Length: 263
Image (cartoon, rainbow, N blue to C red; front, top):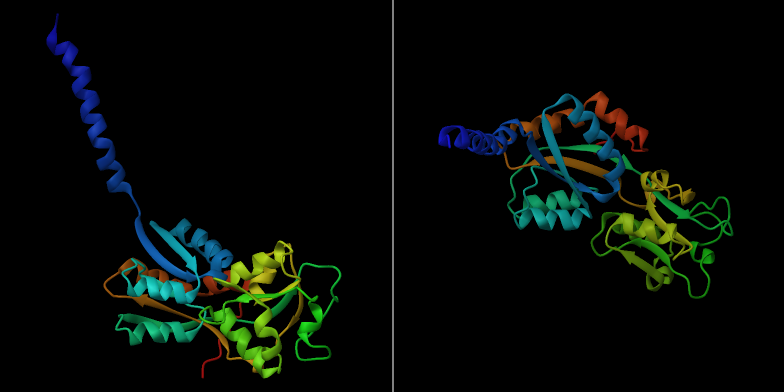
């Protein structure tokens, strides 16, 4: 038997097998971990697709309530970029000693009252005419992001307090862990109405907007974006691109206001 001829295919296969992981590693795109508010899910996914087409990077998003994301970052999340649904949780990160760089306000949003039921009025402007509680049956609840920590819920509480409806509605809230959870309850018909962002309502075929809350009934719904840490050139490039005309056009397509008013 020719040992050389027998061993050669085995050796070739072994070398080829060993080289595959090395080649794959060499060709792997750099990853950018992004912590983004749940309400950004659809728009940011579209932005990721556009950015990855022209850049050799892989963007890894994590969507959740801004409060959850902020706490994860403090506890060691690998996020290199954070986009919050309100300024307070970005402020909180800085107060915890997190290195927040290149911070700026990126987008704004509106607070909407939504329903999936044809039995409710076609339009219902909060603060005008009948109170919101009139939309609920005796055992029905209003779905919202949890006002204890979810930005959409915090804005909702501010708005309901301004409209004089908080005390009556507070015991009848179905509290979601983020704004998308509140939206889901309305989509499934588990609550007749809910309060979510305008962009969440636009992203769903299962709900309709009854009306928008007055902008002066709550703090401005502003999305600040910032790098977490430094010396991450890929994340810095993505952060800069998010403020470009190309990126802002994508967010505007999903209902976000890109003409951000700064104090």
